[in-house]
Figure 1 (cartoon, rainbow, N blue to C red):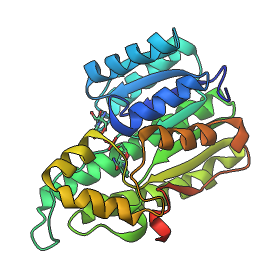
Figure 2: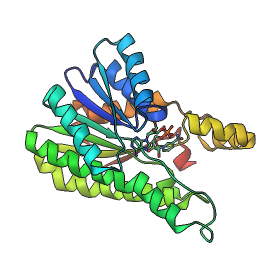
Figure 3: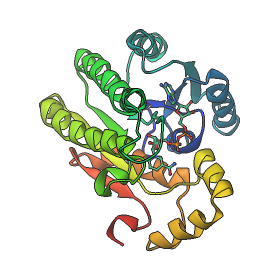
Length: 253
Ligand SMILES: NC(=O)c1ccc[n+]([C@@H]2O[C@H](COP(=O)([O-])OP(=O)(O)OC[C@H]3O[C@@H](n4cnc5c(N)ncnc54)[C@H](O)[C@@H]3O)[C@@H](O)[C@H]2O)c1
């Protein structure tokens, strides 16, 4: 129960990895605000959490590409708790797939907006919020192992995540003196609705991706959540500016 008394916010918590992260944070004793474009999905996950840990979870619908929605999300947090200790910027999406020669510029822009610029907008507003409250805080950005090795036919997503890694390190340097830690968690292939749909379409990909991990399986959202919970807790008090893979060892295989 490393997060007792903490107030946490998780973006993209309506399903997948964000859902797993929010569940682990609540299990660790935190109050959690679950933010998602899909308000109903965030509400459903909140209900599940509250059934297990009463009065722990609150949902908030927001499109995080929109600065006003980001401000409203932070105002909601302020009104509810007057404080924020832990933030996980997890929401992302991409548009378009294919070789670099045919990748449409509008899809490049959309993917950058959904995966990098929206996270940057969140981080900017969050840092302003955290500096005003002037108490220690921890932020975790969710990256991807594709940032470390590239990703054929999904190059703009991978490049956006590489930008997230670099942003994480730059901002960690900027805010360390204010006792705000900023790290990134870089998942390998995780059991999420998108990955499950992909496996249905391409059954051979499942075995290939399982084999690519030293542990010979894909990961579970809660396994990412465990690392996020550690980085958001005071137990990681000397860790900042790091990119940490949760990938069954696939990044070194
Ligand atoms: N699934 C994987 O194997 C995997 C691997 C590496 C990295 N990641 C990263 O982990 C994170 C979560 O991935 P996932 O697979 O769980 O995704 P997902 O698509 O299953 O869930 C993402 C959630 O974010 C929400 N969302 C998307 N754009 C939003 C926006 N603009 N505003 C608010 N909410 C928004 C969606 O509604 C959805 O509920 C992403 O950053 C992704 O890049 C995933």
